[in-house]
Length: 202
Image (cartoon, rainbow, N blue to C red):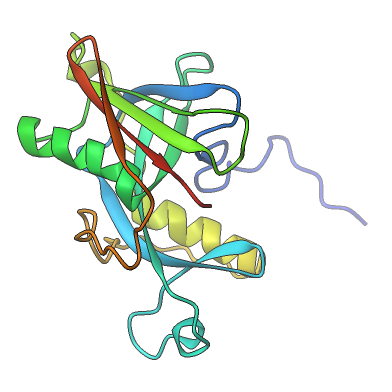
């Protein structure tokens, strides 16, 4: 016999929050709610992203080179809901530069888009301050706990951890490595704001 309830169950952790990347043939963005950019090394294996294990990493032992990705939470201006934006090390540098100048990225307006119609086309990131009362913004997404939840759910839906941790392993983008990051970088200015373009590989 089924068990009946008068109310629906409590929403699961991070219900409705999506992990997004710069789209093809469009743009995304909104008001950043994160205080700081957060990042960590990851692997892309078996068609999904996995966190890099710092010690005795099986994927590293198999020759899979980890890549750094940065993350921040923002408010979608259309749905007024939270989302998390994933950035490569090169595109995240624009955010890191802004963070260094202003001390925080919370309240800034960010836009991400790709040039052309290719899924791995050049990514353009623009971030600029806006006149906004920070007290009206919701608390940022706990990025470490959100990514733990997401990556664990993708690997094993029945083993979602109920925990929070202060990831990531590295907050700022790693130093440029010409052997690893050999893609060309171009710059442009728009309304006095510096934008950095790079061909991203997801």
